[in-house]
Image (cartoon, rainbow, N blue to C red; front, top):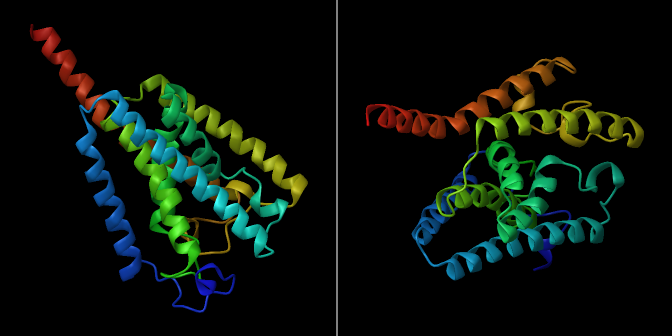
Length: 244
């Protein structure tokens, strides 16, 4: 147990797309498939599922903050609840409990987009399978993605063109705000003031500030891909209405 929570984990380091990484991703895929069984279930049953997802998300994020503090790593430059996934994890809990459409839109576009990117290239370094950080990372970010999918497929929520635009504009305003916050705190929340030190998609992009333009383009493409199923559905519905 001591090794599990240790700051200096002595077990195997994390291997990108290694057996443990692929297994964790596989478990998340199976979880999403399992949750499909709740489509058409009574509201009371679905409410229990939503509360369970929300509480696990919140408890996992709270335990992460506690672990960082107890291991002497907590700093305002790193651990304020300002990073995109952190903000979305807390908001997603409220979205699940209150079935909030506005929060859902941000969780759908940003939560799925950012969550999948982080699950593909997590910042784990020496924290491989068997460490607290390994399980915390895949639980919190995995459920972030799962919650948005659940609300879409099981609860029947959906985004719109207006919500896509709203998320993009608000997201960019938040990005600009974090730039100035980082200047004041000497931090790098959202990686807007410089590339992260660990391996990520940023390594494929040009230096600061030019990589921000590429991130914007990636965000637009991601949003459009996430909206594509609904655009196709709406187009088919319009065609059927026109033929009727």
